[in-house]
Image (cartoon, rainbow, N blue to C red; front, top):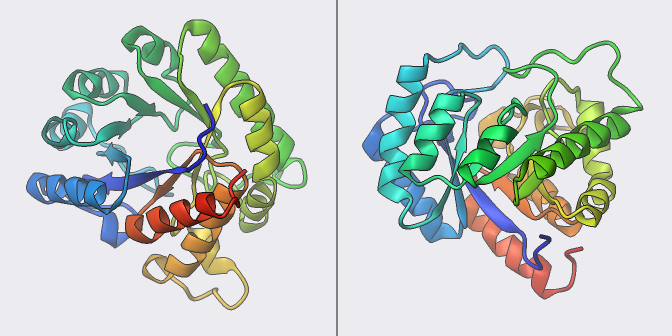
Length: 266
């Protein structure tokens, strides 16, 4: 499954409340335009979601989530590969019928459905959906905790019949800045373990809160985290990530090509 050039997954949030204002596209026509633009910019996958998973996000009713994402998926699925960012089985099923071929399932509960529908699935580590406050037990064992969790879930998905499985360390989901940085520093370890078992590695850290807590960055909000996001996306690709999920597609797609062309990618 590992690819020589990391693929770029562009983010389309058909929501009014996602943490990064630049990715909020609550209107259907705006979301479709953004999705097609991301494909033109170099995204090989567009990840469409209708419910925010940021800390403190309010759950969305199933009917509302369906109304948000289905028209967008139907409009763009013939142009670019679509993943659906959802935790709801009914939304996932309808999204696949509309053309999605990858379940970006932050809950980790939809592997059996992915097998039934014959689509790919992402095994993500989390400590609560929406993303919550890091527990007191977070700390030095975070890398082992995450690797054991996502690889175990990935194996079970494979046993169920899912042919395309990615593991995602869930950066930002119930983890503090130290945890997130430790996971980034050990991405090559997770990539090697995943690849050894036939799984891919997906990394999503674009514009996340911990980037604003780095030295000299305590005041950075989401709109000011581009440089940190790009730097760590390049690091993730060099560490063996197969997919990077990002808001800033143009720069990341160019970096992906440069990283592969110069032999930096794992």
